[in-house]
Image 1 (cartoon, one colour):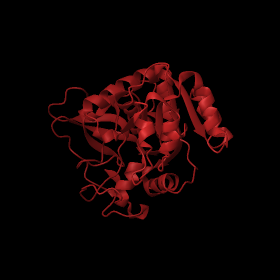
Image 2 (cartoon, rainbow, N blue to C red):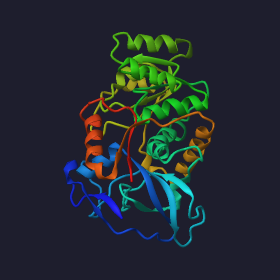
Image 3 (cartoon, rainbow, N blue to C red):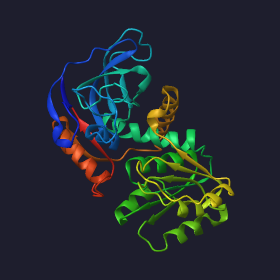
Length: 332
């Protein structure tokens, strides 16, 4: 099979495009003919070595995939040849990734693709959607009519948080940096969209939340969170979700935090069990069929352009380029 792989960790130039053995599905696995995969920041961290995970070379990066079941291994019960599937959690814990024509994937990490969902949409919504669902519901315990604040409502995860919170019946405040992005955030369902550069940003947020007593659930996407600011805007018993800022060491106003019964929750979607992620996928599929969310696709590239895909992702994740709205999709 054709694959984008690396023989060593480093910058995007370490990518090679060439033939690799087509995997054979083991017990409980299916062989997926990959139509589309998505690029995530975690993929670039593993490729570069920024995250010290044990990997075996040659290594194929990529967590997300969508495609069609080509073959099934022994013991497989959930899928048959010809089924359309999507999933995430590949390229981790000894598993090879998805920047290839085929992947052998345990059926626990796969979900049926809705008939009206394209493979590109399925791949674009995989990791980001599961992440958003886990944070809102498993960890954040979101309730209907609560107020959710999300920094950056048009980003990969942010756009999913906006749509899933609205699908569940919450009220959503978000920010964006340009008029075009603010209009996009409104189209995704956000109730209040603000310019994060505004000098009156905090006052506008507090005015909207005054009758509620503050923000119920704050979803932080910034790599350097300002917790004193956040904690000061929370409702009693509010929850703060952290899912970024690997090297951050922010100030923490302990008194204001504990006297208001606040909770600070950190999580990584890769820690969730197959059962927990399946619960996310079931809701995601149903909400998609109901027309309650859509993934944002920013750019579509070919497998031969894997290096370019990682360069674009790094420029936006680490370089502050702000040139990407939505996911980078790689098609085979």
